[in-house]
Length: 519
Image 1: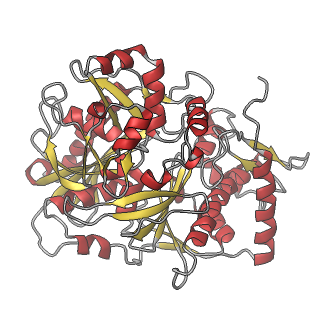
Image 2 (image 1 turned 60 degrees about the vertical axis):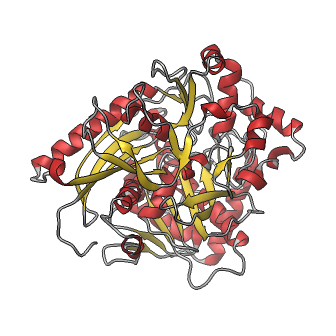
Image 3 (image 1 turned 90 degrees about the horizontal axis):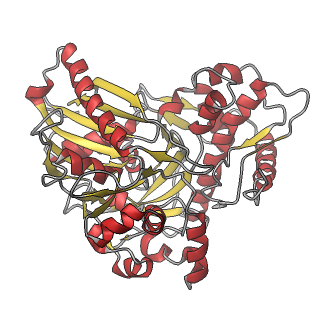
């Protein structure tokens, strides 16, 4: 990307919901070494999802060492030319730990966990503005999705957290804060920080001041002393300390995973991307403007690439279950043995045979926001085979993305120019059938880049920008469509598309008010 030929490498930690990766990129944004490990999913009760914070630390340590080893085995002298490390992470997942011992006071409560439903209902009744009471300040409705609700649950239900706060020994953070604190020293002076993108997902940050909102903290009775300092997405944060691989190298970029993907996809104002992972996340860059959605979307920070750089904002639609539905077919039902098998199985039929599947396992996020929803599969007959079910699972991912994009188009009415195309990334996009279904249901082109792992790349870009490996102009020029991109164009006629969408809406309506079904 850059003109100079001097060797330079950037490392990228990508700590996701289902796995942790470390990737080493060269100056031309090419991966020269990587390693990935899966993260154990803990389900203590129905609707509860947790991670072991110590396992997360160990996974990062292993991935860093093995990725650098893999790059070195290919002849790349990473230690001599590494310039910085970027970090990206699963957002909203909430941790509280002891600053004196460094030990977590409870497992990490994962973003899709719904144990806070009662907290949300209570606040909705107590707040004058109901569910949308905090939207004007933070852009987010009261929902089980966001960190503040999980923190309140921990403060009310976990004795170790109550005691830690009372003794001023507790620290709160999302996964980025937990990792940076440990990487930069832990109990020996670790830095307690978070970045603006992760902070924007807590419900506690004011979108305009980019600082913790004091009235919100007071209303929710959250002590400011446990919160990390908010920094930009691209600046030298601190250096890695003893006990970790790559000691002495600077951490210089930090973004929540979906914001990192926006940078990795080089999304400029007006452009949108969809990342298909455990869930699916669609963000549209709205530039310097904070746009409040009237169609069920979230207003969030896109990125702020430097302490003195302007903030870019975004509209976001979050889908709780996308690739996780494929994992469910594999792990819970045994319909497939590996996630990659679903494309071949679903390709055995041309349609779902009238079957519609809505993966509302833990409720529905955007644009519905129904935590009382539960999964349904309708239209089943004796004709139905596992191939039809597999295809319905793929279609469910695409219908959910379409629901969000339809809301985005309504919110952006009058400001859209030219043909809309959707940039896609994430592990599930290797499935070409899924991408073609997506284009068919949208009626718009879908563009898949050659490198679909744009989340890690975005964190690398942010770190590289902070240390001068790349300029912002070079990063955003990378978003121009390249010959190696694959474009999927719609083949479905408009009449059939409309019929399928109407049937999907029938299926979605069937999911409502099912949370209290008897066991």
